[in-house]
Image (cartoon, rainbow, N blue to C red; front, side):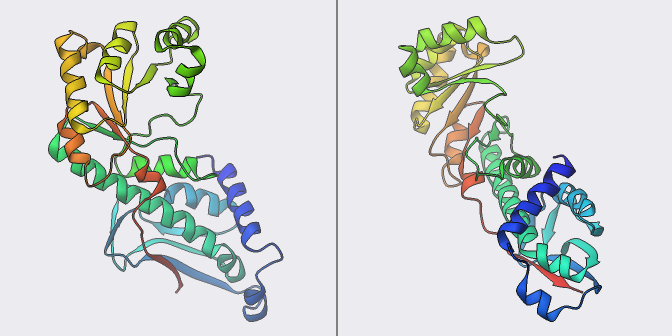
Length: 282
């Protein structure tokens, strides 16, 4: 993430938190006081994420980051994830914004790691991906954090690939017509994925020449049936199979065992596990 853009985001979020300044800090903390502070993990364990990007942005905002744990590192309870130095009033002003960002990112990374580990115990070849379902304003953080936890980022935005969903098919009139239009107009560089609701639709989409079929809200037995049907029709090697919808930590291993290439879930970015961190002036 570009440091300048991230610094601007942080400033906007700080303005939301302190539209007329930090009243408590202005009364208690003298001007010109310099301090050091550490972001400390209070949970038993967590995956670190986005610290490098945040450090670059904090440096642009006038703080000095003297140490940090890199993204993808596993932090233990009591460890300092980041240490920064600077104006005491400034550090206290950005404290909550910084913690909110890191809390979310580390929660996403930890959740992604747990998904990946559970899925690959059942199917070492499967990839776990996140979706475009992210909290507003946090897309970049969500994708970076997911990658730190070992997950695939999937589409970063609507501009990255052609993904035909149910509403596209409804407007086009049929799956065949939607795929025909996409194939005739897309660039060679963009992959074409289509969302299907049955194993039979997966076969139809594969025959039409798509690159990826997304099995939407199918159960693990239905996913297994779709994979076997594609194999029996000689189409399995022509498409990637993605299963999406309703995939959780509790059932991800069952989905992985059904044989898809990719499992995607919004749980990782929309309902990440909580991570407890605090900023302590040292």
